Structure formats: structure tokens, C-alpha cells
Image 1 (cartoon, rainbow, N blue to C red):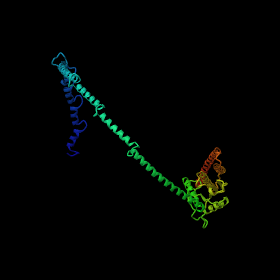
Image 2: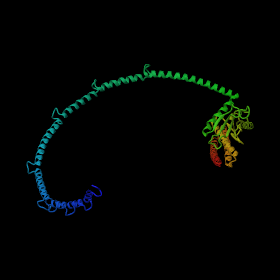
Image 3: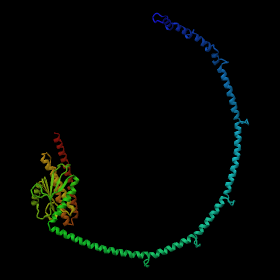
Image 4: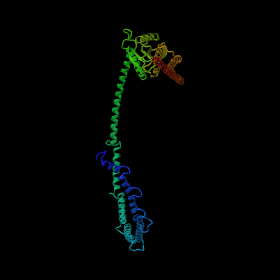
Length: 455
């Protein structure tokens, strides 16, 4: 067993080496064509073997030939059996039995249908007293007689006779309640109640009229007393401030009442209200001071002095002085611009003069924008703006003239209407032009501010 000199190692190597004893034995038994395995297989499953002959389709006594013959015989027998069952010549076949059963069933069905049809015909025959049709005819005849009896006026107990008596009673009751000859009728009672109600309402209306007259007299007396005192000026000032509050808020501006507070000048309260232009305006933060007077002692010169003091007192760039039409001379122009001041004539009780105050407010805003542009040394062409302002002043004066014509000359109605239409159209055009220029100016100022911020 020594791995170097032992015989066991030599015997193992000679057994498992290439072309060794083990390989020769295996080659001799399972090798190629001359091996024992090949000879055995050829003998048992080769072409000359009994198994090959049995499975060969060409052999007459082979398995496939025998199997084919057996299957053909069985198929022929089954085919003959099926054909025999479906042949009418075979009385015991399935087809003959089925035809016989169908014929029998058909005869029974025919007899049953004949019986049922006879029963139906019998039910619809008038010859049979108890048939359905006879009973229906009897019921219809009875119903017809009953209906004829109920709708006959010859029978006092019929439904129509009873209905006639009810209608006659109802008609008599209606006639009795809808006549004025009977004091107990409903119509007569309704008339009496209406007369009482109308009389009550007439007395209430008369009392209400008396109360209204007394109230109106008291109001007129208080108004006359207020016109004679200094309070009417405060009422006019309040009306101007309310008008401005309604018209400046939609544009984003702020209106502040300052009549009861002192301003920049010591112990000075001049300046009834201040309008501060909003951030969306072309001159944000610019101020317009408003002074409203309903005093006959104020003329143009005194108004300019008052509004100049108001501008200084309220640190405003533009002043707006509002005259009351009740205390202003008829020769006063409705809208006047004097430098940075705008004078306007307005009647708090006449809605037709609202346009003058709106125009004056627009002019004041335009002057604020111009003043702001001038302070910032912007090169802006105000030629068309000035022309629009002059045209607005001119047309406002024309409207005042037309208003005077309408009050004094009623025969020239067509002329007045045409002049008003022309002046109003021109005023609308100039206001539109003024708004367009203000928009362009706002865009120019915004552009310049953006450029200055970028630089």
C-alpha cells in the first residue's frame, strides 16, 4: 500500500488509466458496432428482429395491419347499427318509434284543442243563456237602464232630479246673498263694511295730511331760520364734503374733513376738507384743499385769498373753492381756474350743477399732477392738457348760460336743447381727452420713476 513502491497503487492506476483494463472492458461491452450491447440490440429490435416485423406496416401479419383490420370491422358494425336505427323500414328502430309517438301526441293535442275551441265558441255564443257574452249583454242592458233612470227628470228620485233641486236651492241662496235689497245679504253687509272702512281711511288720510302740512311748515320754518343764521353755511359745507366723499373713494383717493382742526398756521382752521390722491394716481400723496362758503360777502378776490391761506394751512398743492349758487352773483362763471386754484359754483339742491363740481375736481387733480411733474423737473408737454382745461372751462360756462336760458326763456326750448347737447358732447370729449392725457402722464411718470430707481 506504499504510494511509491506498493503494488496496490500500480494496480489501481493500471485499472483506471486511458486504455486501461476498465476502459477496455467497457469498450468491449458497450462500445461501437462490434460491442456486445450493439449485437444484443440488433438481435432483439433490429430490422430482422421479431419485434420490428410485428410493428412494420408492410408486414401482413404485423400489429398495425391487425389493428387496422379490427378497427375497420368495428366501424362497419357501428355504422350498420346506426343506419338501422334511423331507417323507416325497421319497425323497431328509434326513428320509427319516434314517428309513432309524435303521431299519437298530435292526435291527442288535436282532440284537446277541438274541445277548448268548442268551449270558447260556446262562451261567446248568444244562444247559450249562461255564456259569458250573454251575461255581458245582460249586465250592459241593466247598466243602461239604470243610467237612463238616474238621468231622467221624470223620476223624482233620480240623480239628475236631485242635482236639479240642489242647483235651484244654491241659485236661490246666491241670489239672496248677492242682492242689495236684503239688509241681511252678504253683499249688503260687505257694502256696509266697505263704506265704514273707506270712511275710516278717509279720516286717517285727512289726519295724515294735516300732520304732513304741519311737518312741512316746521321744516320750511327751520330752513328759513337756518338761512338767516350762520348755520346754513355749515350745512352747505357738510353737503360739499358728502359729495366729495362719494366721488373720490372710487378713484382710490382719500377725503379728510379738517374744518374743526387747526393746520400748519397757528390757531388757523381754514380749509374745510383735504383730498389726498391715492397711490395709483400719477401724483400719489398730492393734496387738494377744499373751502366751501355760502356767504354773500365772498367774491372772487376774497375767495382767492381764503383758498391761498387754506393751501398754506393744509400744506396742499391745489385749492378748490366752492361757492353756493344761492349766495353768488349771477355773473359768476360756474368753473374758473386761477393758477393752482379752481373756483366753482354749486347748488346742493340742484343735481344739474353736479357736473360743475365734478369738472372742478377733475381740474384740481390735473393741476396736482402738473405740479408734481414740475417739481420733479419732468419734460412733459402740457399744451393739449391746457387746451382741454380751457375747453372744459368754456363749455362749463356755456352750460351755465344754457341753465339761465332754460329758466327765463321757455319759448326757445329747441335752441336750448341743441346748445345743451353740443356743450355736453364737447364737455364729454374734453373730459375723455383729459383722462387720456392724465393716463399718458401717469405712465410717463411711472416709467421715469422706474428708470431712476434702476439707475
